[in-house]
Image (tube, rainbow over all chains, first blue to last red; front, side):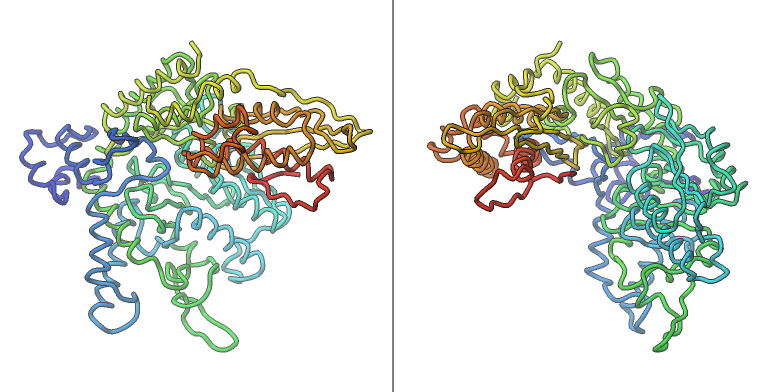
Length: 455
Length: 172
C-alpha cells in the first residue's frame, strides 16, 4: 500500500525536486533501483556526506548499520519544531500546543504508515533497546500480578520458555536473559547455520507449548541475512507464544509491512532510518497493547489518579510516561516520509546492487565473509575477517583512507563466537551509498594484508 | 599512508605484534607468590589472560620473575603485551609500577610524548606515542598493563597500599 507512492515519489524530495524532475529518466518501474540522477539528488540532501576526513579525504561512510546520516528534511523538521511549534503536547489550549501535538501525532502516523501499522499501535521509545525492554518488563509486571486477568498472556511461570536466536544483537538477548532470571522461565534459542542464516526449521522442536515468547531479528546486523518471518510467526501462533521482531536493520532498507508479517511486537530505531537519535518505536498489535500493563509510570500515561490508586490511559499513551522526545519523534516522522517518498522498493533495489558489489570483497586474498554469499534475502551489511589482521587494524587502515566501517563484535558476541572469531569488520550501506564508494572500499581493503607483512 | 598512520604502526610495533614475547601461558608455581588476571575490552572483545610469577630479589625485594600471557586482539594490544613482557620481566615491583605509570602517562599524552627521562625508561614502549593520538586505540595499548596491575593487586605484592584501577573491565 505504502509502495504506491513510488511513481510520484521523487517529485517530493525537498530541495531537489527540480533537479530530479529535470532528469530524463522514465518513471521507475516496480523493483527498479535509483537512477544516477536520483542518487545524486539523495546525496545532496545529506550535508555531512560532503565533508572530508583524515586530512582532506572524501568521506566514504560505510557504517550505516550502526547509525545512518540525516537528510535536510529530517534536520529541518526537528529545527522547525523548535523554531515554530515547540510546546507541551497533549495539553494546553493554546495554538502552539495544538500545532505541537499535531506535529507529534502526525509523525506517529507517518511512522505507522511506513511500517504498515496503525498509529495507535506505535509507542515512542527512546530507542529500539528500550522497546524490547518495555515488553520484557511489562511481562515482569504482569507476572507480578499487574494488569490482572487481561494480562494473562504476558505472565511467565517457572518452566515457561523464552526462545531467541543465536543471531541476536545483545539488545534482543540480554533483556530476555534478565526476564528469565526474574521469573524462573528458561531461555532457549535457535541456532545459526554456517551461511549465517537462522535455522528456522529448529522452531518445530525448540518452540513448544511451554514457549511464551519468540524473539528474533528481522535482519542480522552482522550477517545481513533477512529472516524468513512467516514460519516463525506461524509456529509462535500455533503454540500461543508472543512474537517479538527486532526490525532495526530491516525497516531502513526494505519494505516492511508489520500487519502483513503478523508479528505481535516489533521494534526499530529512528537513528538507523535517517532519523534522529533518542527516538525509536515499539509496535504492538492493538489488542496486546490494550492488555499489557504499563512499565514506566508517572505523568501523561494516566486516566484518574487518587492518593491511593490510578487508572491508566489506553495505548499508546499508557506506555509514554513523562515528557516525550517530541522533536526527535517529529524528525523520525520526517525520515519515514522521506523514505516513503523515495519508495522502499527502490531503496531495496539500490541496496541489493550495493550488496552484490560488497560481496565481491570475498574474492580478495585472505578475506572471509561472515554471512550469506549471495544477495537473496540479504541486506548490504557485510561483515568480514581478514586472515592475520585484527579487525581493529583493518578498520584503522580503512579510516586512514577516509572509509568508515564498524569493527568489533557489533553487539553480537554469541554470533561471533558461533563463527569462531572475537571480532570482525563490517561495511554497511544505505540509500545514499554509491558504487564508487564501494569500489574505493574494496581497493583499500585489498592493501591491508600487505601493510601487515602478509601475502 | 598518512604520517599519523606511520606514527601509529611503527615498525617496532609491527615486529612485536608479529613475534610477541611472553606469549603462551606457563603454569604458576603454587609454592611461591604469583597470580593470574583476565582482562576484557568490552567494546571490541579483545582479551588477555596474564600470569605473573614473583621471586625474592637479592635485597629482599619482590621481583617479577616471569610473565606469561595468552590473548587475542589487535596489533596494538598484542605488541603492547610483548613490550610489557620485555620491560617488566626481572624488575622489582616498585620499578614495574613506575614503568607502568610512565606508560599510562605516555598514553594520555595525545601524541606529544613525555619527558625524556621517563621515555628512556620505556625503551621500545615509546613507539606507542603515536597510539595516544587515536583515542579509540589507547585502550588497546593499555589492556595488558591493566592485567599486570591486577596480578600485582591479586598477589598482594603491593606493600605501599597502592590501589588498582584497571583501565579495562576485569573478570575475576
